[in-house]
Amino acid sequence: MHGYDYKFAMKPGEKQTKTFRADKSGHFPIEIEDTSTTLGFFDVV
Image (tube, rainbow, N blue to C red; front, side, top):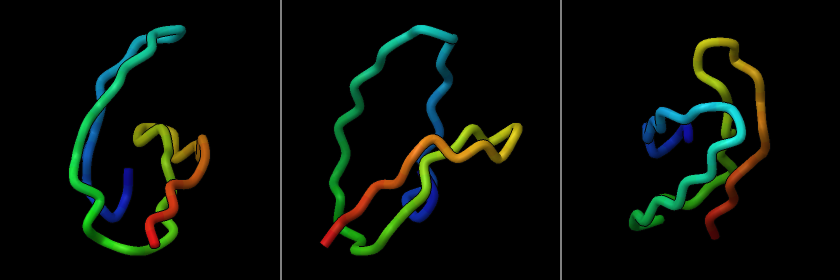
């Protein structure tokens, strides 16, 4: 997750839950770092 610089190691089909403080406002992309494939966006207001 860009903007927060969190990286998660996952395998295909795996689900994970992460807890963190969302204290930076903005529109942040969620992507596969190795391929720069955007999976979605994370909005904090």
